[in-house]
Image 1: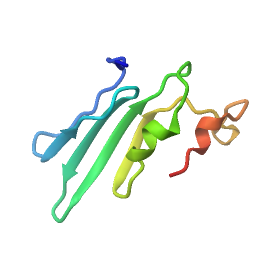
Image 2 (image 1 turned 60 degrees about the vertical axis):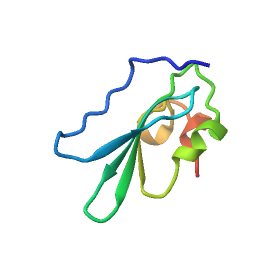
Image 3 (image 1 turned 30 degrees about the horizontal axis):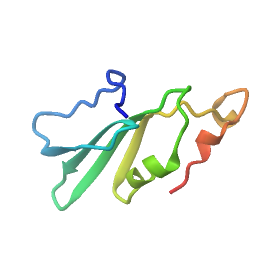
Image 4 (image 1 turned 45 degrees about the vertical axis):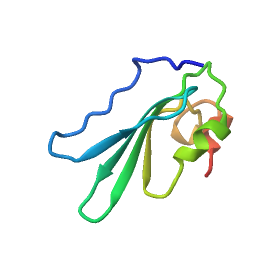
Length: 93
């Protein structure tokens, strides 16, 4: 399955040492490993469109220690002003 492209951008300052990590098909994701003074931090930028079925088995490997998850997961929850809550807001790993 090829993934759609064009919905994401991750900007990294030239002076930051990083490596882009290829993530499997089925998820539009830019995953980078940023070098810090003593270790590293992963940053995952995800886009999961509202019409796409969220498969937690595919995205669960992203949810690791030292990883910052950001992006547009199209999750709905009354806590942040949506009129209803869906299942996407509660992915826990």
